[in-house]
Length: 151
Image 1 (cartoon, one colour):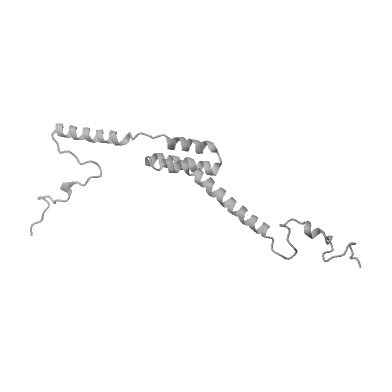
Image 2: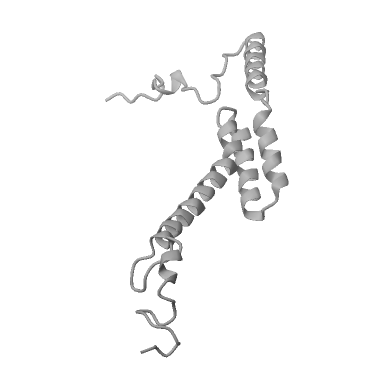
């Protein structure tokens, strides 16, 4: 006796001889589709991997500028954030170029020269040299004789 579709067999939609010619990734009804599960895991891992690669590449100028001066690092970090949030690649390229260029330290030699000139000027004027900024004043720790109270 034939089924409703006109052919015999267990599955009404398939010819009985067709099951031998189906590819291996076709699963029977109710079974787990392992190809789908494998590909779903692969796609999720691929998306996460691409995101990690993108953020590592995006942070490259900051890593390069980290060995430089603090001001240079901060400017590069701001340019990288601007590039991230605006999707403007010019900021990222500017940050990368700024990170690659070593900026010479002009502040330290100029401040050292200014401190030396201040010391020379005070010595010529006959006064006591003032301590450099940030240094402790040695006379501030000792109380004056005038301010002592006798008891």
